[in-house]
Image (cartoon, rainbow, N blue to C red; front, top):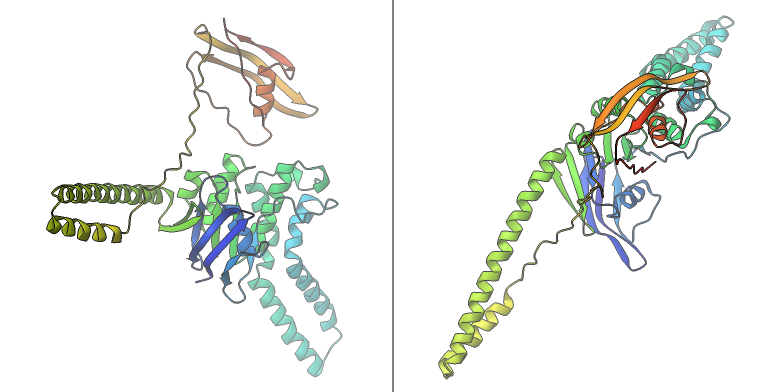
Length: 397
């Protein structure tokens, strides 16, 4: 067991966020912390890392185990390039490599016992460098950055010129390559396209360490985790299995609790009816029997109906006016920014009732295309036409 969380309670003012939360994580286990927005997932991660102190309870981490958490853009050096910034997590190995090179030059000038001692030290350093993955540093960094959606041409970009999403991906790359024993990721897919998400799934699935994820993407969690910790109504419950298994187990448990509650309610009403009947006889013997049943009824531990938190969205989009069958016609749209060509000769049609997804890697022009179709950006060439009685509504990033 690499992590033990015991009876954690945390409040902010009068708002209780976590109550008596307990669970454990084994070495190399992949776990998800799930719950509705505001349930306390991020708060719990901060307590585990020591960023927040609980009101009560303890967090125990295995001796010498390292803990890493994604902190968005914190800790980035603006003057570094992307590659230099990610390379900085290997500072100890790079320093060891420099020491190895210095020792190599020294060996030429030594002899006797000094030479033997230096050779032994040189051998140990080489072994440590190899065990630490020193010979794979460049390939590791290149593979990680490419996996997260950066091209090699972008490796030399200054961190100061990056967008918030790009900086988050750099911070994620640094964390992944630092290889902590407990890796904690809070919504890691927020700034990743589908290719990068698939790469991250593979990386985390084979990660040699414990992983704790907070994410709302059930399919992402299904492919990675083998344990789900749900925070609901300030309490935590653990389930073995991926998200789909958790959802089914939770439903079964909820159905069983509802059944128990209804059965108890029926029994209580039955007993109350019997008591009323006995009292109605208005005889001493009947009244004593009624009082006895009342005492027994009072001792029953009353079950509560499981609370239902309806987190499902109910959005209904209905046009005021029914449009024609031809909703949108796009012909030959092209758009570039300087030397960067986003798309050319783009043709497609949308009919009434269609549900359309625009997909592609980050930076391929998806948002630009939407802006063109909403008249916010002009295309370089081509045209688009809205059908009869078609009005648009646009929700941007």
